[in-house]
Image 1 (cartoon, rainbow, N blue to C red):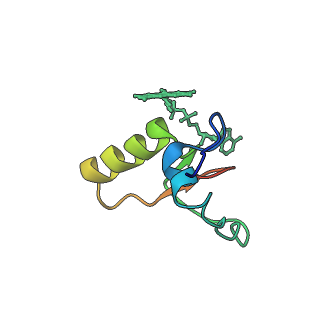
Image 2: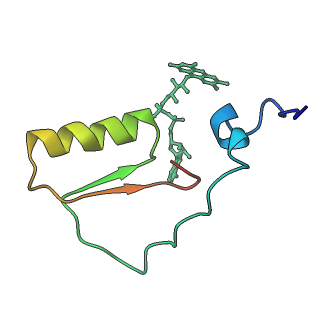
Length: 67
Ligand SMILES: Cc1cc2nc3c(=O)[nH]c(=O)nc-3n(C[C@H](O)[C@H](O)[C@H](O)COP(=O)(O)OP(=O)(O)OC[C@H]3O[C@@H](n4cnc5c(N)ncnc54)[C@H](O)[C@@H]3O)c2cc1C
């Protein structure tokens, strides 16, 4: 039987063996129309609906941990 520790990463991440590797940080300054800080529900849905409303927008979502 596999025991999953509670209170750490989510069950879904724990179930697939832990967090996926982090992506490389931005190589430097970038130019975008909108920068969203935090890839939680609020950040990701904001990016999604902004893109629906105005597909031409360039949007960066910056996350310190993992999305
Ligand atoms: C244990 C637990 C269980 C829950 N279960 C449920 C559930 O079953 N169903 C449900 O609907 N809701 C659940 N919730 C609530 C849900 O997780 C929150 O309502 C939701 O995550 C809030 O979304 P958010 O985008 O506002 O914040 P968050 O999800 O907290 O996202 C904020 C993001 O911003 C990032 N961030 C913060 N500071 C910086 C910075 N300076 N630079 C870059 N990135 C940054 C964080 O790393 C994080 O990824 C649960 C919450 C907890 C704690």
